[in-house]
Length: 387
Image (cartoon, rainbow, N blue to C red):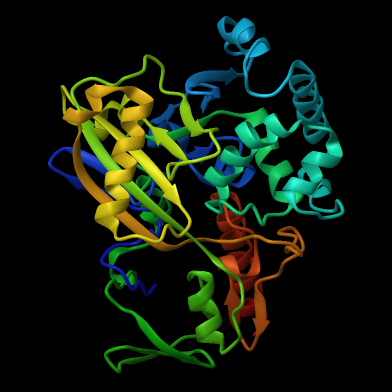
């Protein structure tokens, strides 16, 4: 196994610095992902769950939209929230039933359209689309322009309906570590960036050549295309993530907090250490603010704007927040714009014992990364057995 970075995991890594655990960009695991439930041991990961719902900043105040079955205390607030109308909430409940009533495979056979067009056709109000769906899906896809297929929206809603959102107690980087436990250490070579691929021979940047019976590509989409010599036109979604520490969090329950206003750089503010205490040392809280897209300013200016927005949201107490660390992930995700691939129809074998389980051949999400990896392993095994 060749890994270009210092450790395995790709974008799913956690840096431990001075008692704080910094995921490389804010990340969560949808516990209802079928592949995750099959391949991961949630008990060993000590999954810590976020409350079932979201907190939305709209009309200069916060509004919680929570699952009424799991958070009945928020039913009245949700009914009279300024996020959409009562009719919108009935439509959302109906849509939740619909996405749960068919198989996951069937969702990816539906006619495609952009999310905005789908939501309008379903009858949701402008307020519901602007204040809930847009920040919600921007947080998932990191694309403020929402050039994303309705299939992806339905998939995400289904996962939220079927299960909780959580993080491993020691950070998202524990997921690839758990998956790699069955691989002996000498079979994982880090700091081994691949320069080129010809047949089943890879040439590393240091000039070393390695030939195997098969080559499996599990790289970011642009890198996969480069190694295969294919043109690449898919856009990348960028994420900037700023981490702050404070003694006391400004909220009581750590709902995922979204920006439902029609302005500002921040998409979400998150309180991971309130969910998983090991994300911060005792007596401290770790807070992240996520900025998707491509704001046209230096990082220092963007952070100043983010801090001003945080002050508008949470008041003067943010003056004492210490900015600990920031991440800029240029290729955080590929934008899954239509026409999108059906992840259930993809096959990894490209011929000549080259296999692709990267995001180039499927949709972005931990679910599809795990499914593609499992499928590639099965195909490699079957083909090598018969060769």
